[in-house]
Length: 189
Image 1 (cartoon, rainbow, N blue to C red):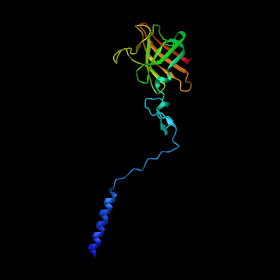
Image 2 (cartoon, rainbow, N blue to C red; image 1 turned 180 degrees about the vertical axis):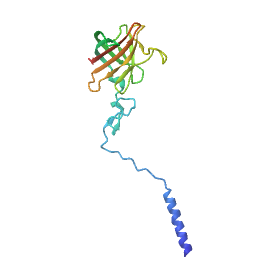
Image 3 (cartoon, one colour; image 1 turned 90 degrees about the vertical axis):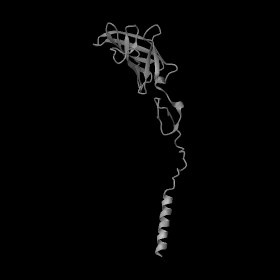
Image 4 (cartoon, rainbow, N blue to C red; image 1 turned 60 degrees about the vertical axis):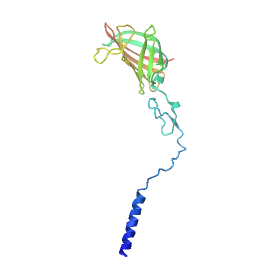
């Protein structure tokens, strides 16, 4: 009898061991009918994951360059580094996406005549920064050529998060004679 009881205990222990080692199977996926809100699922987009959870739909995405593209009326004020007012002017800025590049590169035309374009890299944080194409980490003045060969410009353009028609421009121009700041506001036409 003892032997029979021992065999039964061993049998149930082995059977329990095999049953516990059985692979787990996932339950069938369930689609929640409440999750119909489309959201952008592209990490390069400004509105990445806005509206999540829902259904991924990249047609609702907008990118950093899209924040700036258009024609603007710009009111420029020029100051020396010490804060002395030099002059003011108004002119038109044309901002376009750089063709064939990532979704965050833009060109700005209008500061200088002769078709000179400033290349900027826009970020999802509503700031576009002038690309450094002149100089390296050892150069005294990095940036881009501005209106003259001897001018180097650095700075950024910020888009207002509330008013989508407003840009704030802040550039610093280092020339052969002095350093100037260009500041102003641009309103979309």
